[in-house]
Image 1: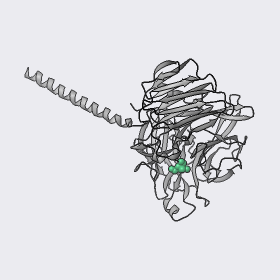
Image 2: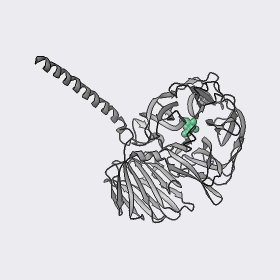
Image 3: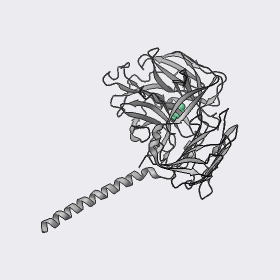
Image 4: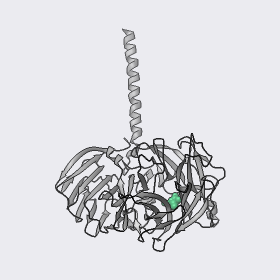
Length: 497
Ligand code: FRU
């Protein structure tokens, strides 16, 4: 009997210590639960993040690297942080991929899979993942030189887990222009060459290479009529095909400042690329997103043909106030991933940004909304609303009277965050965000509300507004005016729990 008691006690001891351990793990998981911590958007565990970098798909994983400063929650000597996802919704944080070296800090850039081993840095059996990025040399900058930004490469043959700097770095030196950065590289099938788009002060320069190491200048793109309110950054060039089977090339150029809501934003051009130069078909400035908080976004490379989507993510921030937003111990998040599409309207083209289908995995419960007043228990919400016309008003608020107001009329759509919560960290933060409808007839709104952001997709992506806000309590009620009698609301699950 004694023995039985002993064995039982031992069992009880083991069982309770297992329980303890389990409790510890779940406390650990609570880390992503700080005030304002995005619950279904990517954010770094702590410290400063800006641009998404090096997005590439390989062997079942979407890689997301990002501009990262691990020693502070404001911008500083840049590294590449790293995360992977199997579904673009749930993310696994990985160790820092690239550290500054004698060539400089690691600024923005891209990553490709060198499947034909053109660089010789991997093999055809085990192709190298190659990151192409900007070295920013702070010493050269301090000395007043004008060639302190150069392009370098690094490679990994173990699915991005460990990285080696290429010994011959830099692979592309500056012609003596201070702003010479953010290489975005793709394999151009027609010319059987790599093409690099590079932001060079107020133009995009294109370069070509057979091996990702030796680069030759091709051409510049800087039409008179484009937006030049600030320095050009983070280009991306890729083809999209309309529903009628017409293929055009899209060129993204982020600019800071000079965006439509002040500060940073991304303009895009629709045109043709012949392997050497890009020419724009239409001559009007077009904005990828009309909200204040979508910058430096680019698209994933190497997405399998069977998938066929052009997948995008942007930095959900703005250089006007990104470094002073009231969050800790991290600063900033990425937008929701989106798939990009091209539609033709008369002689003009429109880029459509849609929330990716995978986000439906986040839906926890569904409620039909009837009438003008809504209540919601969860702070994580997707609203699928049908409007009666372009004349509508949506107000989301909390018991403190803090609110976000979205209104439409026949000409414009406006987001007002002037009473949204904490707004006093920067003067311009409370400005109205107004977008012209340019003939879009508003029929539906898809709204994603996270703890500190809202994304509004008009007519499934014909116009997008991405914006951040910091309510002192979660919004938990809404007023809808000008909508159909019945609409859908989903509560969403956190991706961190
Ligand atoms: C854009 C940008 C890039 C640069 C990086 C530095 O936000 O200014 O041009 O490479 O951030 O962090």
